[in-house]
Amino acid sequence: MNDITVTELKRRHDAGEDLVLLDVREPDEIATASIPWATYIPMGEIPQRYGELPHETPVIVMCHGGGRSSRATQFLAQNGYDNAINLAGGIDAWAEQIDPSVPRY
Image (tube, rainbow, N blue to C red; front, top):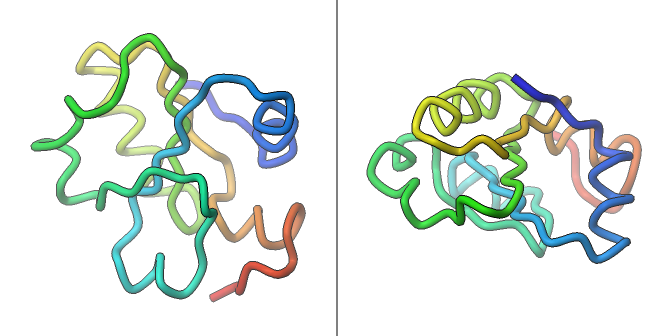
């Protein structure tokens, strides 16, 4: 399974690369801290909704710290998403290293 750092994600996003940032956290977590350009599908809905995601575009999966997103990335890879990538450290790393205005919890 592939991982990406928050620094690399920011670089790729800033460069205008076509990618999907998939946030698999729960609605209350998203209400606390979020990245505006992310796509939200809660972890429990991934098995029913993963078909909404493009196959040809890298899908970078994010959660709070990287555990849930790692499991979701594995699920996507097992279901034909060769471009599924886990965001190491999740939104917590994003808040710490990239955007300190994002609340940490």
